[in-house]
Amino acid sequence: MSATTAGGRAGSIHSPLAEFWRRFRRKHIALVSGAVILLLVTASVAAPLIAPYGPAVPDYNNVLAGPSLAHLCGTDTFGRDILSRIIWGGRISLSVGFISVALGGLVGVVMGLVSGYFGGLIDSFSMRLCDVLLAFPGILLAIGVVAVLGPGIDNVIYAVAVFSVPVFARLVRGSTLALKQTLYVQAARSIGVSRFKLMFQHILPGALPAVIVYFSLRIGSSILVAASLSFIGLGAQPPSPEWGAMLADGRSYLGVADQMTLFPGLAIFITALAFNLLGDGLRDALDQKLR
Image 1: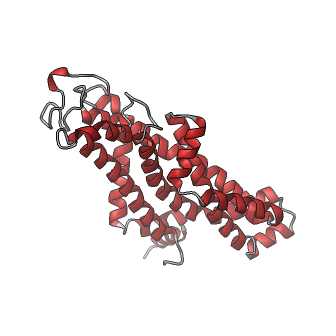
Image 2: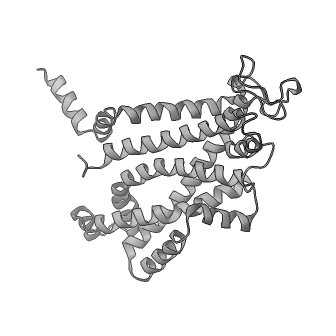
Image 3: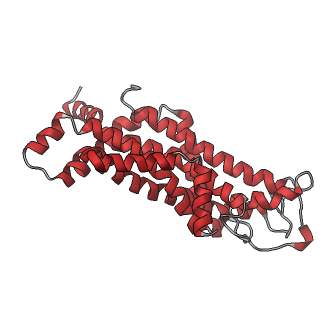
């Protein structure tokens, strides 16, 4: 065996990214889920190019029409193409999921780092605040936030972000409490490294695997909550092609035009399932205890 080959193999063994990919690619269900998510994101971004019709273009000659070659998923009460509305609606649902979880994760990660590192009154106050937020079911907390701020997709993002904060905070706090006692953190502290660098350069990287896993899992549940809020009229408003709002439009036509609820429901189900399965695969690949 040549020195180059041996060196290349050694480099791949010690590369964290290569080691992660070696484990993750064995999770075939997670790989398929990642491909589905990539397809959904690509379709949403390219909606103006691939959607056969505009999301609000009516066809009064095909009102409540079933699936056909002209309308693969049928039409709604105004003759609007359901497939096109699902593709365009992916922009809204996926954006709400990603942005809300990113906001909640950012606040929760900082809160957990500060709480776990400093402890004392800061820790007590932060954790009691998290306890208050966790005392409410996620959907009820989101409804309360939207009720205060008013209906609309922007307020849905804030509402979903709020109920994501306490779980991220508790997750990062637990990792911080364990990591700040490690030798490399104590060594960095002993040579005068600032608290900011200790938290964000030495402790945070050790907590990131758990944050990444929970981030992917939380997106699916956030999409479900956003769709639920739109379903009861507190989220996206007509004629927005948001998936939950489409379900609300079709509930009065069950048994008459089932395509109005079937296909948006499938879009929500497949998206949430894909994110959950991807999160399971990431957990198995990143969690050292499972290995």
